[in-house]
Amino acid sequence: MTDWKSKAEPGQYTISDFRFEDGRRLEVTLAYHTLGSLDPGAGNAVMLLHGTTGSGRQFLEPSMADFLFGSGQPLDVSRFFVILPDAIGHGGSSRPSDGLGPDFPRYGYGDIVEGQYRLLAQGLGIERLRLLLGTSMGGMQTWMWGERHPDTARALMAIASLPERITGRNLLWRRMLIHLIESDPGYAGGRYADQPAGVGHAMALFQLMVGSPRQMASDLRSVDATDTQVDRTEAQARSGEDANDVIWEFEASRDYDPAPDLRAIRAPLMAVNFADDELNPAELGGLERAIAEVPRGRGTTLPAGPKSRGHQTLHVAEIWRDHVAELLAQTETAAA
Image (cartoon, rainbow, N blue to C red; front, side, top):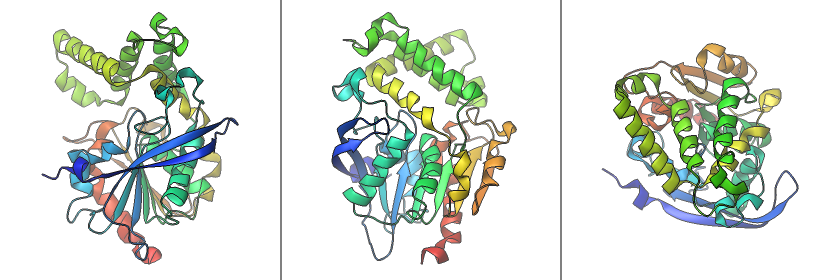
C-alpha cells in the first residue's frame, strides 16, 4: 500500500497584502501539497479542493488516493501533477488560531477562491488546469471557479454540492452549530484559554448531518454505543479543533450563491451527488434545476449502496472515480 502522505511534497505561498472582500488586508500564507511532476507542455496540472474543516491532505487518505492517484487510476501521478491546497482558514493556511483569534478577517468563499487562484497563477505559475475537482465545500467553490475564472480549467467536477444559496435545514444546522459554540460561557467572546465544550457539541452535530442514516442505523444500535460515539467525537474535537476556526469555517458560506451566473460557466462541468446525502437532498431537485443552466454541464445522482456513506461518500473515491475518468476522456480532444 502506498504511503501517500510521505510522497506528497509540502509547500507554502505567502501573499503579503491579501485584500479580503470586506476590505481588510492581511499577510496570508497558503499551504499546499503536490504529487507528481509538472509538465507545462502536456498541460497536466490538476487541483483538488477539500471540504469544510478539512485540508488538502484529506485526498491523501487511502480511500481517496489509492483510487485516484495510483497506477492506472484516473489521476495517476505518473501522468498528472496534482495540487492539494488548504483553503484560507483551514489546515496549514492562515486562520484565526494562528494568533489573531476573533480579530481574524471574516473570510467568505469568495476570499477562499481568490486565494486558490493566486496560489495557482502567481505561486505556482500555472495558467491552465487540466481538471479542477472539489468535494463538498470544494465542490461549491468549483461552481464559483467556473464563473469567476472561466478559462482556467479545461474541465470541472463538483462532488457532493449544489450551486445555490444555503437556506432551510442546511442553513439552520449551520447556525445551530455556531450558536453551540458562541453560547458556551467558556467561549468568552473568542478569547478563551482552553477549548470550550461547545466546540465538541458542534462537531457532534456536524457528524450527525454529514453521516449516512443507513450506516448509523447499523453502528448505533444501543444507548451505550451512541453515547460512546458522542463522547469520542467531542473529545476529538476539543483536542483537534479550534473554536474560532470552526465558527469562521462555517460562517464562510454566507456569501455563497452561484445560481444567478451559472450560464457564465464555459468549461465542461460534471456534477456528482449521492442519493443518501442528507446535506444535499436529492428529492428537492436542486441539481437538476442547476445543471440545466450550465451550457456544457451534466449531473448525476449516484444511488446508495453497501459502500456509500451519505455525504461522506465523497471520501469513498472508489464509488465516483469512474466519473473522473469519463470526464477526462470526454474532454481530451478539447484539452489537446
